[in-house]
Length: 81
Length: 150
Image (cartoon, rainbow over all chains, first blue to last red; front, side, top):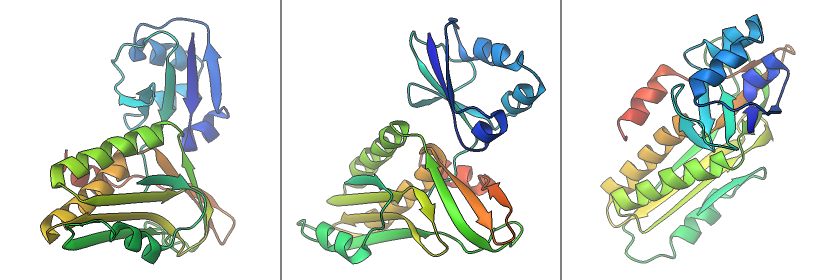
């Protein structure tokens, strides 16, 4: 089971802040494919090369393995400071 | 010291706290403020909302903070970053670095803000006087500057 969190513009565009998925995913690429299957809105966001992903609060890539019970966050480029 | 908070900070108070440490010959600081205009469109900003990813914000800031202290041999360092609703000219972030010499104090301050800009998950949403809104975009120079301190 994994927890997905969405932030900022992505959260607004998808209309969702968080969800839990019962499925297991070996890596972030598999997860991306699954989320893209939800439709155009998801594809546009996830296929954007600037969309970032974090696993258990560490910045990751779209090819990293996903540990069990991971917390995954998907967000646009950071703009703090 | 690292703080992520809604309330404003007092710059002089934070400098005074840092200045209690020994072996300090230089203190460098950076203050980030809420702009009163959008940098692309020049649209006047009425307010700013600062969103963050709790837990990851603290973790990533801790990493940058400790890396800077070690690399620049700082005597003391404080980073305070605000979240929530802010107005133009409000304080957003304060970085104070103290070291025996100025090169270290200035270098550490620069490295922390440039790294924070691309590694610590905050996002800014601007609300304009005409009622429209937009999420601030990351600038290409932010990554270039952060890479300088990788």
